[in-house]
Image (cartoon, rainbow over the protein chains, first blue to last red):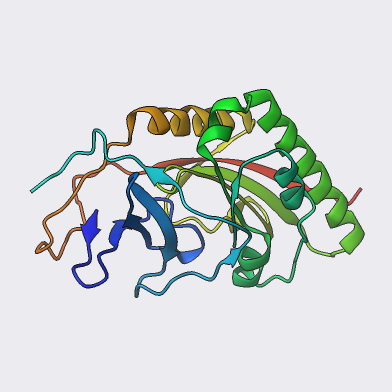
Amino acid sequence: MYRDPVTKLWWSRDLAGHGGSSYKVFKEGSKGFEWLFDAIKDGTRMLNKHKGPTGVFIPYKEVIFKA
Amino acid sequence: MNIVTISNFDQFNLIINGPLCLSGDQSEEIYHNMWCIALEDDFIESIKIQELEHFISNLIENREQQFKHINYKKNAVFYMWFDQQALQLRFNVITGDIKSLPFGCKVSLINSYKTILNNFINTIREVAQCGDRIEFFDMQDENWDEDENEEEYVLDVFIKTLHRN
């Protein structure tokens, strides 16, 4: 994962690449990483229809940091 | 795409009864028909795999009924997969057939959605308890999203052709 120093968001390559998605974008929260949205190659957010509270937290525990 | 975090069984009906849009425009169909489903922490522990299977069975049945009522002339497919990065169960309906699936990775088509549901439930329970293993890159590395030595990613996808009759 890569952290954007300006927005503080974390970017990861989208492995499935569904519908033209190139990246998955997360934010850091108190519980872990929260998935925010999928983005296309130029970084533009894919269009979403929000149906309610979103967010999946990946706890920091056992996270591997690589220099 | 529709994004939802489920905390109780009633919310599954929102998804089952969601509208179906078929136009032949894949971007438009993804916008209207695709769902990204996450589960609340408490719900992850309480839901049973059989209940999730029941939800998917009802969902597919309803999408087939919707397809019949639309009286659309072209073929359409329902497909579902587990997005392990977003920790979401995802599905979509598009015009076309197996060749139309819009994935950027290699796809392994599977006959039963139970495999995908098991993977979804087991993974999100494991992450909820133990956390995920995430690889971080140096912020100065401009090629952080390229890895020539990485094994080809293969995604399990369940696909169901929607029938008019």
